[in-house]
Length: 293
Length: 304
Image (cartoon, rainbow over the protein chains, first blue to last red):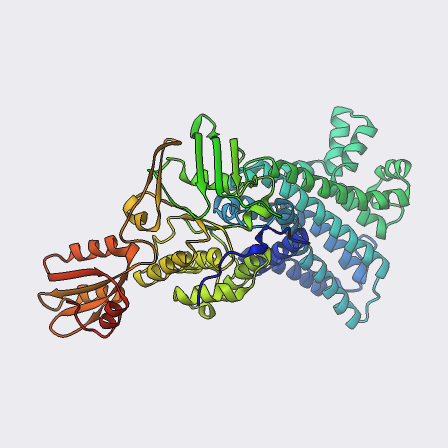
C-alpha cells in the first residue's frame, strides 16, 4: 500500500477545529491520568478519607452539634480544606511543568492543534480529574448513609458539592498560572507550596493573632479573609450547617454586616470560580505570547 | 482560485537568542516546494531551534513563512501541512492508542493510513496499543513517531535524525515511503552527519553558530527510492556476521555466499557494516537493482 499523499483539502479551513482540539486534548488528559500513579493515590486518599469517616463518624455521637451524615460532611469538608488545595497545586504544576521539561510540549504543540484549544482541553481535563474523586467519594458516603438509614441533608450536600467544585476550580486555575510562569518543575513546585502556605497562614485563626498583635483594622483583616479562597470555602461550607456562624464567634458579625447570609453564599461560589478562571486566563495569555516548549 | 505557490519555506533574517546566547543569527533561506534539504551542523548549531521556529513554537526575530503563512499566527492551518519527527522521543505517558487517536483527531485524518505505514515499518500496533508510549523501546518509539508523521496527508516533513534508531528493514521501508512522497512533499532532514542522510536529499544546508555556512546541491547515485543488489562471500561461517547479515535482510546461500537487496540511501551504512568484517569478506558485488536483479537476489542466486 502506498503512503498517503498530499490532500488537496489541506488548505481548506477546518470547521469546528477549536472544539475538536479541546475535546481531543481533554480525552488525552483523562487517558493519561488514568495510567498515572499520582491519580491513583489522589483518588485513593479521598475514598479512604470518606471510608474512615463513615466507619468512625456515622454514629449517634455529636461533634460540634452535628450528627450522622451532617457530621460526616462537616468533617470531610474540613479535611478537604486541608489537603485538596495542596494536592491539586502540586499535581497540576508537576504535570504541566514536567511535560515542558520532558519535551511533550515540543511534540504535541507541533501537531495541528491551536494553543487555546490545547490549553482549554488540558484545563477542563485537569478540573474534571481533580473534582471526580472528591465528589464521587461524597456520593459514596451518601449511598452508604442511606443504606444505614441516616437522614441525607440533600440541600447541604448540593451546596457542599458546589463549594468543592469551585474550590477545585480556583486551585486548578492557580496551578495553571504557576506552571506558565515557572518553566522548571522545581521552581513551580516551590512557588505552589509557598502560595498554599500563604493562604493557610491567612486563615482566620492566624488572622485573629495578627489582629491582636499588629492592631490591624477589622476591615483589613476581614478583607484578607474574604479574598482567601480557603477561608471563603471554610466559611461558606460552615454557613450551610450553622446559619448563625456560631462556631466562628465574633468574626461572624463582620461577615454578616458585610455580605448578609445570601450575599456571602453568592460570594463563596462566585469568588473562587472567578479567581480560578481569571488565573487560568492570565496563564493562557502569558503562555501564548512566550516560547511554548 | 488559490494561487499556486512554489516556495514552501521562506526564512528572512531569522534570529533567536536565549539570554546572552545567540542561537540563530539572521538566517535567510528559501526552500522550494518538493525539495529535500539536509540540515546539518554540530551540536548547538541551531538545528532544533530552527525546527521549533518552523513549528511556530518560538518567538523570534525576522520572519518565518510556510506555504506563505506564519506558523505562529495560523498554527492549525500551517501545522496541518507539517509532519514532525523529533530527535528525542517525548516522555508521553499516555497509551499508544490514545496518542494515535489524538493525532488523528486534531489532524482530521483516520487511523487506517497510520496502520498502513506501521505495517510497512513492521510495527505491530495491536501488540503495543494498550502500552504507555514512554515504556516502548527506543526503536518502537521512533517507528511510532514516524507513523504519526507519515500516516497523515502533509506537504512538509520536518525530520530530526529520523532513522537513527531504526533497524535496516525499517530504514528501507522508511526510505521507500519517503520516495513515494518525494514528488509532492518538501522535506527538511536534520542530522549531525551528512553521510547519514546524503542519499535522502538533493540539497544540503549547514548551520554553524546560528548562521548558514554552506548551501549546496547534492547529486547522488544512491537516490531515494533506489535499491542495490548485494552479493558477498565470506571466508567461513561467523555467527556475529550472520546475525547482522540477517538483520540487513541478506539470505545465506551455498558455501558462505550471501545475497539480498538494500535501500539505496542505506548503502554507505551497509558498507560500514561490511568494513567492520573486512577480514572475513572475500568478495562483494554491489549493483544498482533492476527488476531482474531483484528477482534473482530474492531467489538466492548470485548476481554476476
